[in-house]
Length: 182
Image (cartoon, rainbow, N blue to C red; front, side, top):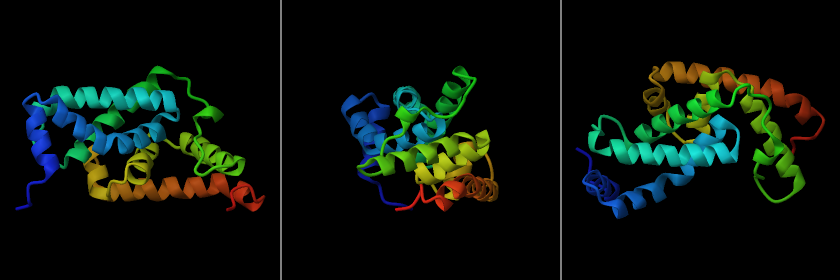
């Protein structure tokens, strides 16, 4: 049996309507939900909308949360679903706009690397994009990602393998030209 955490207590209080407890939970997961949403939508504005919709949906559904998975997994499953809805709503989807690419570190070189990476992630098939978002940007393990997407952990690893192979192929020409270095 695992120990009861502060988050567990906050979740119990939030399920009974305690907005302050839920605000603490949101604070603990805000950045991760945003990173996942940005990876799936490709745009900061859409990602903020998805994050807000995710937390609103979680607040409403929290009394029905069965705790058969970790809260983070459940929350990122909601985020992935909301992000998929946002992407469908703004089709046709082309390359990610440059303004969506926040710099990894200060400087124009980092902004260009981030833009190229986000453009490349945006070209992945939906399931690969979801796996990359949850595993890489969301920080979930294979089992958690599988639970969030309703697929087996082995399928997560296969999708991640194919996604990373495709990203390497897409980004290798830029790396060979020295555009993705350092």
